[in-house]
Length: 356
Image (tube, rainbow, N blue to C red; front, side, top):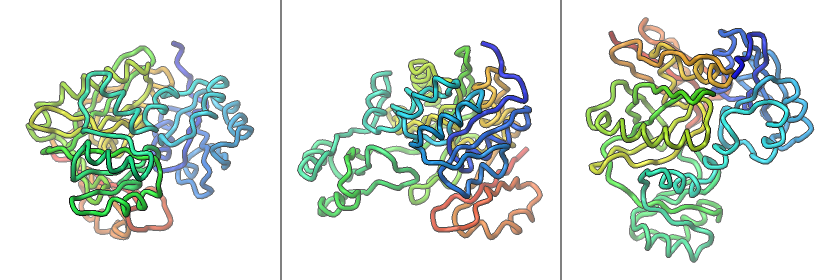
């Protein structure tokens, strides 16, 4: 494992806020970043040395991009897999394509977790209107119908309750292949955020307690309640087993429900994650810096927390206009992502506050 020297170019597929924060962390370590995105208004490109604006499936543009990079990573998991297999022959690609294969398919993801000893909510595949009825009978009501591919922050899903007309929910997901998930009783939601180096070394950040509103992460809190801490080791063991099985390199986030019977796996994100944004000020080494360290073959940084208590709050929609009020509290660390238009449900930034 030869470390990538400063001055090298890191390619980042995706032009959103995660790419932006990765590029900032990379610059601090002396690297240049090249953003590849189909979005002309990429907020990651604002802080990067180079920018290619082209379609995700443009093989020629992707090839030229890969030729200009020394290593490539991605900031979201909905990158088309087939083109990535080709460009990974031109430059190292981390995390591996296998992680995307798993994370892009909700059924494959759940089966992968189960194959590694994890527990999931009951689920059944839905391919047409008729199979929706049998799936609901299998998992029970209430249930959540989620598209197998795509969808995040509550998008691409609908909740089915007793007495509902299933046809309306099938229409709500545009007749796409789905998974029906049965409800489970849980007390808290949390995530295991780990980083795995090229040498297989794994480090964990403190486990955040995640609070959602309307399907979108609202807050991540450190330390987590005792009910979560009691299940932390079991959740970490599963996340690590999955990372090892994938020969993973970089930051991997696995989301869980805390239940009376132990942690229940919900989903994984093969990338830096919103629930780890608190690590920028709240940890000795942030998730963004350690992701860069991992993909570049550098020693991993200390993941210990930098304060007794940390609170990260997402800035969603029009609340971004309240930035001046946020800065009235000198203890607040404000991160705005440079997005021009604030709209309902759009993540515009976050605020981290440390307590000593």
